[in-house]
Amino acid sequence: MAISADQLQLFLNVDEPDYDKLARFGRSIVPQLAQLVASQDEYVAANAASLAGMIGGTQAVAVLERAARSPSPFVRASSAAALGGVESPRANGLLAALLSDRNKGVRKFAIKSAGVKKSAPLAARVADLSKRDPLPYLRSLASRVRSRMRVV
Image 1: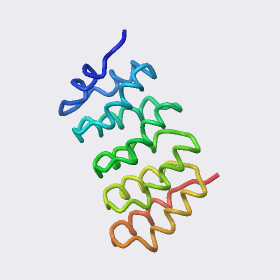
Image 2: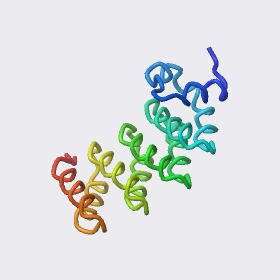
Image 3: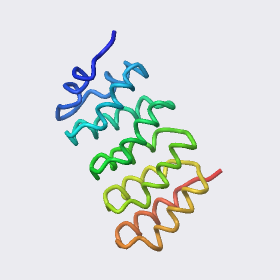
Image 4: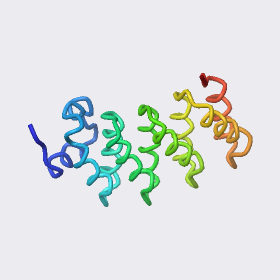
């Protein structure tokens, strides 16, 4: 069953989208998510990024890349959170960039997502944030996350 971008937008523009149900559409809805992640409606765009992360795959990473470049910190934070569940070098590169975001909320979600990765470069970036982030609570979060990271 196909779903249009307009229909998908309606499903994403609710208090609690049924991500599990929507993710069952799989990669067939990634083009619609690419469109919605650029929406002027930050809520829809952020939810589209979250759903793309659940679906995964190369095309979904492209959607998350677009979300990571959004002018909205809310959308960038959703991208950072979603990238934690996507395994690919490109996803890790996006996450590394979001660890340097100017917005504290984006950095917070990027730190948390980096914590589930098995990546030496991400672990090094998180360790650096534990010493250099301008905000004490993010330095503390980065320190706790880094101590739990298992790097191969």
